[in-house]
Image (tube, rainbow, N blue to C red; front, side):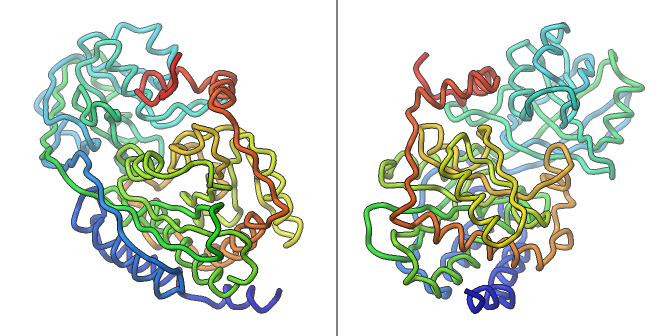
Length: 436
């Protein structure tokens, strides 16, 4: 056992791939940089020992940012467009809705206004309210524009897409502003007329998923996944270069332990995650769900030292996480709630057992993620190596013939979504796939 652990703890394969990804530059969905990242990931998986490394392309709604602005009484305020904002402008009174919780929209009249909301939630609220949910509450209530205010200090305007699967381009112009600019807007211009303007190039584009595999040629398989794309304003080191680097590291480690695998392991690095889980959605629509034993989706790993695994109510996944933690004497946080915001979800929403693997954090939201500060210097090589050891053993464990991971029914997932107060948000964002 100690030999393979030593090999991982002295390996630079994943870290070198992380550096290669961040050095590409812009990896926005549908961009040449995203394509280059997919190609180097395919080559890295093949070099790690995985078989049948290949790209699978699909069409997406392309979006490329132009100029964006907020003008207040003739003064320009720093901002950036939110991807898939329409190329449009609005002039209207600013309404600061604070956290932008659902009840905040119920209590305020925002019709014809430009709504500003924070990127976090208060400590008393029992669930995370996603950016897109806040945006579509603004749309449904008749707002003319949307301003997304970062809660993280440091003059960092946040990015993050709007739009739905059926209508990929949003309905009202949307921009992100830093905590500091948001504070200024709230203090000086709440109730005053401001102008928000977004310019963007909107045309058809192409993205791609990367596939490779290891282990015996069984029908049953474990998916080990990440996403390749990143927002165009930063290196995308944490979100999600580190996740794809982890997939490459795991491929190398599992190739050395291939005799221990009792079912097939399929590695998939998805494209176009940041614009609505498009790559994983395409895969979910074109592959057999019943053959998937479990999904180990890496999105948010390495940014902290301790692994956090959202298990979506699958007891077998929680048991496996506990088994690995006990085996290595290393803490692993297992969260039983649903988490509908990464590449496991197009499968898990139909009952496929899936982890969302992240790192623990005391922060609300993404921290440096989705800002200019998502850079390589925020990540430690030690964390990648330690987590790769745990995840390698987890994947081997999940392939075991004695490990049973029962699928849930869609009705089971719907019941959990309702119980956890997630259904309303998914309905308003167009992410509700079930027949009511």
